[in-house]
Amino acid sequence: MRQGRAGTEAVTTRWRRALHRARTVLRRTAVDYFRGDASDWLPFTALLACVPLLGWATVGVPVWCPPTALVFPVLLGGLLLRPASLLLLYVAAAGALVVEDAVLGPYQDAAAREVTPGTVLVVSAVAFAGLMIAQFRSRVGVPWRRGGTMLFDLRERLRVQSRLPQLPAGWHAEMALRPAGGQSFSGDFVVATRSADGRYLEAVLTDVSGKGMDAGSRALLLSGAFGGLLGSLPPGQFLPAANGYLLRQKWEEGFATSVHLVLDLDSGDYELLSAGHLPGMQLSAGTGCWQEKAAEGLMLGVDEDAEFGGVKGTLRSGDALMLYTDGLVEAAGRDITEGIDRLVGAADHYAGTGFQGAAWLLIEAVAKDVNDDRALLIISRD
Image 1 (cartoon, rainbow, N blue to C red):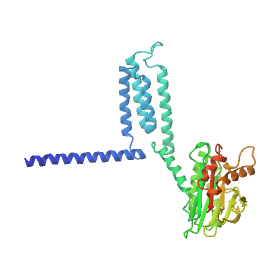
Image 2: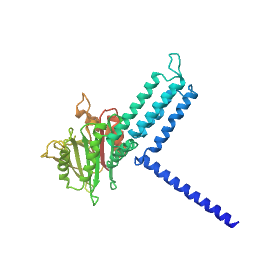
Image 3: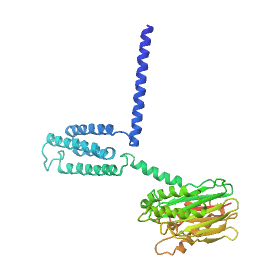
Image 4: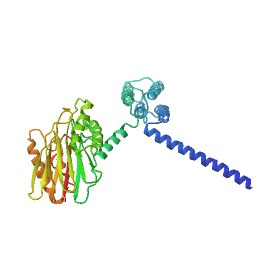
């Protein structure tokens, strides 16, 4: 009796271990498949099995399953399979159409259940589109299931690089980005860091030539490079180093405007260095007026001997400094000075609240439907 129980428990244990191993392998395979590291045999087998099933359903109940139902495995194959596997699936789908045509009978004008020329045309068009998608992904070198995920990762990386460091009590900083056309990628970006002792804040606002998706890849590359340079070089050497880096890329549209802020968080003294960027605007709490802070400098990526001038100022209690890109203030048929006046006029409404949550609302107020990238950085002192 005991031996029988022991044998039963041993068999149960072996089954549990086997089931656990199978579950682990299946989970690992699913993860690898999602990442693009595994073979596509599993989706290929599943889609290939769907082809004869659909063919059988078409022959048996053509009213509910027409011959054009073959577009479903064909379409999914274009999204999930490699080009070589996809061609094998297409051969199977073509064979299914031939069998359906032979069983259902020759095409007649009055019949609606046979394989018509329109059926062949629809399935062929979907197959061609799927093959183009698969070949494009293969040619680019992006795993066939990771294209969308990779773009999402790039977008999130750009957002992470644009986050502002935490400031000490008495200071507030916020930034808002709005890409052109409602896209997820922007040619405007911000990189910022604090010195090792925490006393100085360095922030760079850059506007890459182009907009939206066209400038997003260059903005991502530059934001990574600028983030590495910022804080590693003396403030006066950052823009020359960024200019040299941009020139070495030799892009056709290889220029950008940039403004570099170096702020002493103890005293409130700052220096604003410009590379062809729009002037900053400072609010003086004592007078309630905005003062333009314009520095001279050539755009990045134009001349290797370019010089970048700076302007100095001080942020006292209640003061604020706004840095922005041209998408906020430029518009067809309107002078840029008028656009700046409109921006500071809208910003006056938030002076009493210390500009808490004002960056995004200001973009909504002055440039909501502008087809250009927009970025706004606000630093205020309580």
